[in-house]
Length: 98
Image (tube, rainbow, N blue to C red; front, top):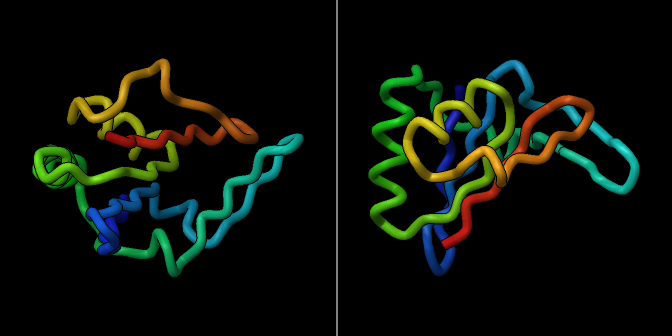
């Protein structure tokens, strides 16, 4: 899994499954573009990603999360719940906005 932080008026954490990086999925009016510039960050295992997500949640960050492993890690970290997940071509996607 990959984590990249962007600085805006608050931190934005972009998280994706590494194998999805650079791919694009379209279904109806929905599109997932797992752009390398936005999502291409530091490779992390699940335990370290969960810790990082919890820390960022405490800092009032927002989150863009794509992929089965990444979404599951975000659920375990307590930053999203299953009701907030959508799928595009079977790829799970969630936003965490505070």
